[in-house]
Image (cartoon, rainbow, N blue to C red; front, side, top):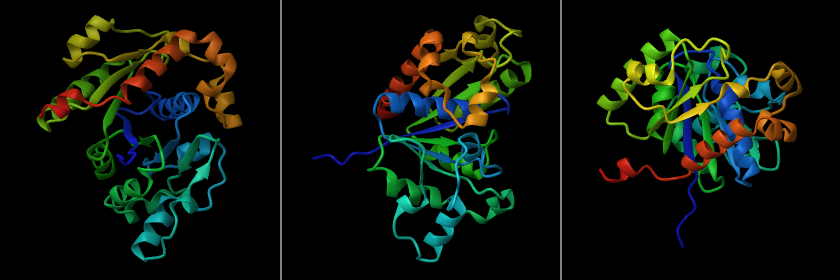
Length: 258
């Protein structure tokens, strides 16, 4: 019998403020609705945004896990995870950003090895530049999501990043345009965007997914895509998230042909 292995997904961007962390949580909510076991690992080590967004009381985080592995004190990965719901668990980044440089990126591969057979999907939230941690996440992922907005700086940076990904031989990435960010300020058409970034747009989170009281979900520690009302009112956006989530469960055909 084949050993179960989770799909590992890195969500990143080339610019802050494009809804990266929200997309991580919304994808987790979609997978939970599919009855998939999901682990979200917060690899944005300069903050602890995932735990803050979900109002989680963190006892042990990535720093403690890395320290315990390094000092042979590690026994059970579950000791470091926080249960958000029946299907979603969180491995939090440290609250103190000064601890970032004390966590070796090599521990990520070890951690993934300990959780790979337990979860169906592992989603890695990252910082919006190619740090050693982001590169390690990308190298250990089945799929990489690059989230971008309709913004000239974002698009020019995305064009450069796509060129870099191609130079690196990466084919396992999807470009996702988030139109719910700056939803009233569509500077470029999708045709313009394709010409600017020299790449296809794989998925578009529609402007209709803009939620006026989104801050309330953050204050209450809730995931938007797990809200039954949102799933009805924002049916088009939910369908996009569903299609994106399903596509990430597939194998990368181009990568497999190599």
